Picture 1 (cartoon, rainbow, N blue to C red):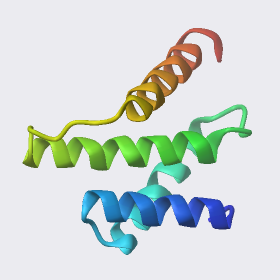
Picture 2: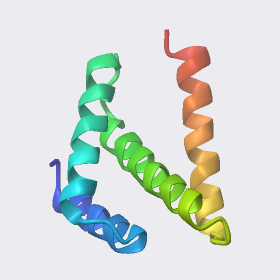
Picture 3: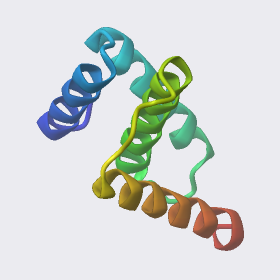
Picture 4: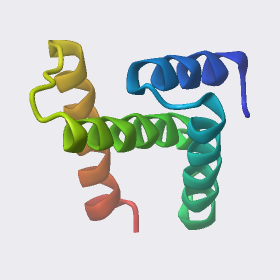
Length: 93
């Protein structure tokens, strides 16, 4: 874990997704490890990992309850992640 901020965000994700903190933390560590292994630039890996974990549990919740909706902030976060994915796919060679 890189910081207390990461832990705070992981607790928030666990609470919002009704998932144990240990499961969320384990998922974060797995995604973080995968990103570090593949990345050439490591500056934003924790941020990308947090966003991936958040999306993973959001997708799980949507699969179990398709009536869930998300706020404008959630939509903006998704666009930010999509933009980062686009950049990584097209420019981070």
